[in-house]
Length: 508
Image 1 (tube, helix red, strand yellow):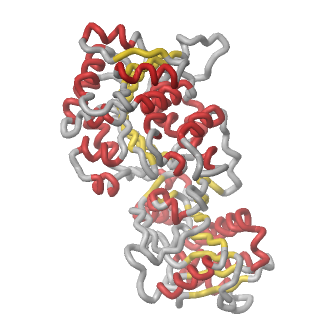
Image 2 (cartoon, rainbow, N blue to C red; image 1 turned 180 degrees about the vertical axis):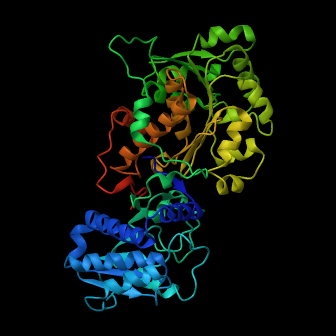
Image 3 (cartoon, one colour; image 1 turned 30 degrees about the vertical axis):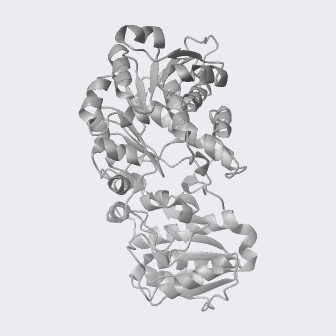
């Protein structure tokens, strides 16, 4: 079953649909509390002997917290509760009453080994109210003393739709979110920690037709990638032509070529400025090299007969004439990145015309996307889940909007969210590696969306594998090397009751 990425309003609509179909709201709360308890015991079981401090707000998020308190105490765990006040909903009051049936809870001592954040839920917006801030301060103090923090649905104060983080928001070690994954969690990974998406029984109601995109499905991605057969040879594994590499920028094409070669390409030809040719052939001896064509007649000789083009890595200023010449004379599927996109700033109509009807992928970061779409970078960041689809329609190309998270959008309306990767990728040249991977897959796959999504998944998975050892001190060469393992990587089976698990990213 797909896992959908929702705004707060979309998440609420799914709960409402399940309730309208016959699932009591109290049952959804009970399921959420049970799921959170299971996650806590799986992630921090070694700490429960040090006691659990639960922070319960007055809304339904606090009701979830009361369910956790009841279940943990029933298992013999020492539980203390900081209650912000009388629950404001019938379900939350009932959950509180069940939890205290066996006796009242002491307030936290402040030195518990675990803290559960159930103060504010997905409906929170802006700076928390004054009456909530003392609880968040107490939660921050216990975290500062070393407690493991589990957030329920979202860390309190995080805007579930926009990812905005007020200063009072306390970062979580992990977040268990219910039914769907909230957009804000994927934007603010630094405060979300590891993310577990719990199944609370929404079933078919999780797939409301309101435009919420799905998370990337690792199994589906792996199934979409053609196998390399026993009788494969260099011609059948895909021929990729990479064009870029102005003087002093050969490294970008070298990284793209290495990414393509590590992703199955059988033949890679790199076309660069004459001044970069020696560096290119020294840096990637597996690739052949040529110099930029100066006229239409020279295109075939320079590029050969590629199955896919990668245009842009290290191209520098003045790329447009060369890019247009190549696209006019070679009909192969194409990936446009970096300077090949910047060449069409403010002229997306010309970009669409240059691409024509071919399968195409463009891979902008937010600033490049803004320049193409004629909006501000802030507009792109605010609308990151929607703007890629608009740009895909404008260009007739699959748009890989890079960032946290990366969103892949196709002209036919498909949108997929890929929250894979690590800060190892936050360095110059990362996009060049991704462009090379995408080119290798586009050379052997007939659907540009599937090829782009598989490339994003492999790129991000390789970065996550590298980050298991270290973020600081790692380089893109480590990511390129890790691609070998990424292609065969299969995530461990999900624990019962979970729809998805995303690792914490960044230095912890």
